[in-house]
Image: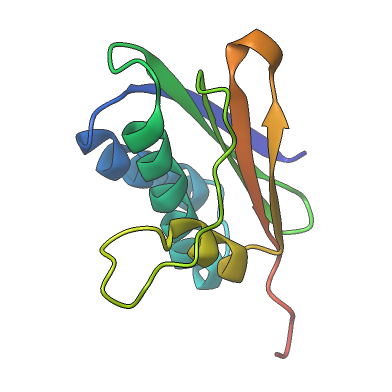
Length: 134
């Protein structure tokens, strides 16, 4: 691990933008490759949006963590107290939601859910270092 930063945010729609700004600030300060920054931020948006929309207790907060690894990859983690894992959906064309995890799946090298017992779950995604020359 090269660098890791975790922070807590309230269950509020404004937390999505705050999470994006904080992750952008950390990755930029750490000198991360700007070519993957937008993809990382989109993943942050989708995972935080899920935590805000589906978290069980609006008064409780949730945690966002970003880790920049030595190989150039980034790990994004969003932990909340919801026990149920997120579900990949197949939305219809007219549906206004339900595409977030498909987007995470398309952008991330891998993603998954780590159950934390009575404390809920962590949804994580890894976005690898860009391939040089490609």
